[in-house]
Amino acid sequence: MSDEAAFLRAIQANPKDDAPRLVYADWLDERGDEHSSRKAAFLRLTAKLMTTRSRIGRAYWETRLRPLAPELDLKWLAVVSKMSIEACNFQFAFRCPKRWENLRPTTDPNIRRCETCRKPVHFSASVAEARDHAQRGECVALSLAVPRTSGDLDNRGRRFTSDEIRALGRPVVLGRIRTEEIRVDQSEVTDPTPDCDPQSARTPSQKRRRQRRRRNLSWEEE
Image 1: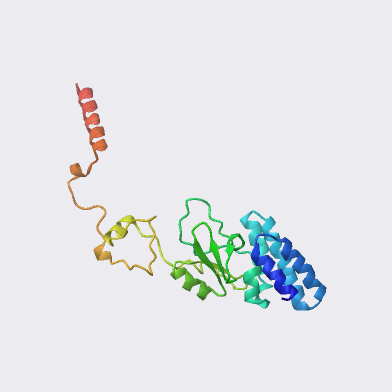
Image 2: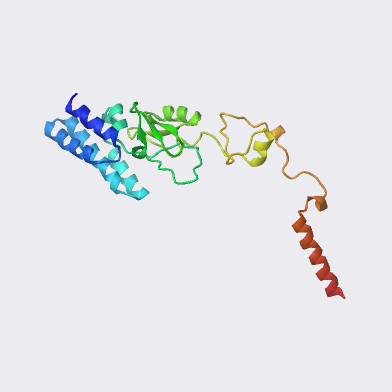
């Protein structure tokens, strides 16, 4: 096994630990070639993401990383990168890590497992690939080498109303169904406000409040 392969195995074994990245960066600098220097710079900038807690700070360092990424191997990027998790349509009862480096590695460097939702997260090399995973309900980490545009992964589906979901005969689970799974026939959606007698539509508490108001008015008239 080469020294470089050993560094990559150490990083993959513990993605959150920056010590292997920094030692690897020093080793790359000693090699002296331009490609190794580019990889070393990427590793050092990636280490900055761990010490940055704010979104603005992470966005700043990611902006510095993006120009370096297109010249680097995608498999290498999948091992060493730190990225946000996207297209995750699972609603968490507690905070989701939503960071690639916080996920448990698997035997495939392009797949890591989220211990929160017990699902795989896929490293994607293009927006099209990320969309394919998203349409299957899978979370993704999109390579920093990919040029991004606002909302490029936001067209997976929309949030349906409870009435639409009930009209389709589906249980209401957090009010979300992907449009790829179900197409709504608006003719089948029941009117949430059917024509009915207003008196029968009132709840018992509303009826009691109305009766109290009537009594108060009658007392005032007397």
